[in-house]
Image (cartoon, rainbow, N blue to C red; front, side, top):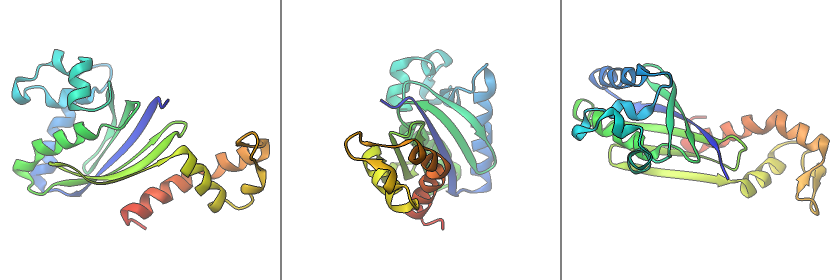
Length: 188
């Protein structure tokens, strides 16, 4: 089962007014020891600070049971969450930006720490426009295809690489994952 999921969100299009509102909302998350993503929504539809730390509220409005803002800047945010990426929370964020930035959308990439899965999405204020997820079995095949000499270290019986293969994988895995996400999003 997945544990921590890292999500990178970057704006495709946003107005200056949208950027200012995004900064205002992200600053609200700085209120505690951890930058709780839900704090960006305090005051929306009478949502309270107690609401946004509740498990049920988070699973209904953010997606994962918890989600922190690890970092944010003018045109991006990085989140860390439990078991999945904050798809619903990102859509809710874009709903808050839509009145001052019509047509705002983001590119999102996410990866489980193992990685049990990785993916990429395009999200608008109406939700996910398009998305792809690669599960571990698919990733394993992609790694064997794309990383030179890795496949020769695969043990079918054990369904794993030998020690040398795992070392080769660790040296190349995250670059391959980034390439997959970028290729899907057309960034290359």
